[in-house]
Image (cartoon, rainbow, N blue to C red; front, side, top):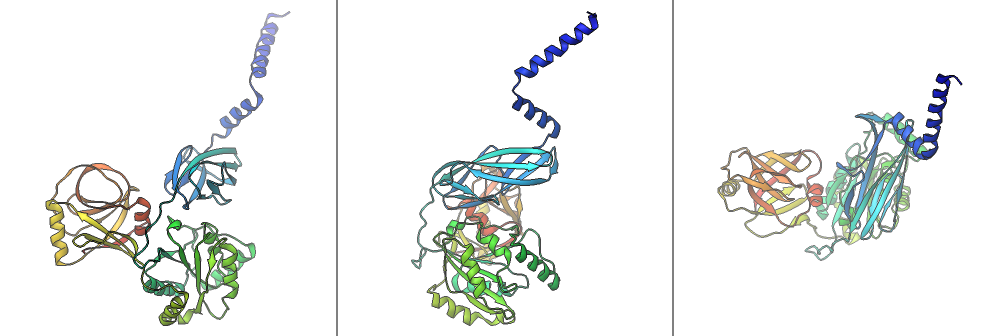
Amino acid sequence: MNLKLKKRIMILLAVCMFLTALPLGNFFLMNLSAKDGISVQMQIGKTKVTKKTYSMKAGASGQLKVKALDGKQSVKISTVQYRSSNKKIASVNKNGVIRAKTAGTAKITAAVKTKRGNRAVWMKVKVSAAQTKPSLPDGSGEKILIAYFTRSGNTEKLADMIADKTGGTKFRIETETAYPQDYDAVLEQASEEKEQNARPLLKTRVEDMSDYATVFLGYPIWFGDTPMAIHTFLESYDFNGKKIIPFCTSGSSSPQTSYASVRASASGAEVLEGFWTQGTSAGNAQEEVNEWIDKLGITGRMPQSTSGSEEGKLKITAGNSVFYAELEENSSAQALREMLLESPLTIRMSDYGDMEKVGPLGKRLPTNDETITTAPGDLILYQGNSLVIYYDTNTWNFTRLGKIEGVTKQELLAALGSGDVTVMLSLS
């Protein structure tokens, strides 16, 4: 036999033996990975949770987002299928909304399909038992959320009136893709969404819906019914055992069909008598709104997101949320106290580093810098002229001005929101 031919046969036999020893499925996956080179990441808010454990309180919910990458380039995802290893502990719906139910740990898996190949990734959800919340001063034990969707601003006027009457926390429902400014274009888009039974994605989210026992829900009536974004909102949270109270505006359409739609989407909730007025009359409806709320039996103002109330403390007001902080015994805090004795201070604060809100004091204070590891609620003087409210941890040389006791990261984020916020400082 020719020597060259003999060597070729020996090499071929060696390759065949290697392929026989390698499991075909493993070889296929190795080959697929080498060809497509994509990775899949899971994220809740700004927290990356791929192959990690994410902690939640029972009753809370979170929006899980999945993206595929080739290096730093995004890869289009065709479909995602979610699955929970234990739905009694934490469930996940088809849109990636995780609902924490009872204490324990559940594994959430996302099966991702792209034109470049398929991938399955996972995370774990550790659920802790929900803490019993203290009753409010009026004895109701309820916190009120006023969630509303608006385009022209008429529904927001009603939301403001309800907030004035109840002291509830306002929350604006916004879609990821804004609706057109042109009215006819809005009608066309709304008609298409209704025909397709669409669920527009939302860019705003209530951080801890479990805190609220009563939810006022506002919207304009489009084509005789609720906008489809309202269905997205209602299907994104667990409303079991909660009260939902609709309020709406329209040109002439009756609200009854929209009330039925709210009941259909708010599974497990008690939907109370709603309120309706023409959009053009919304600005003059305060008396009617007050009578309606009194009829519902919801009386008195219910203070939201309030920690402590002792005299002499620093009072921090952001929208309808109020916190109280104990000031430090140093020259920096004393200088701030003297500023506030003259008049309250309003500061425009911005996000920085996913851990803090920062804004200018308008005046330089003496510093007492030391190495500090922050925690949620810490009030820090930065570079002598800026106030920082921390909602997460950071280690640096700072001056501590005070601390909001007993507040959680979630409570601060719910009060301060995402983006710029106006905060007022005063002495209680």
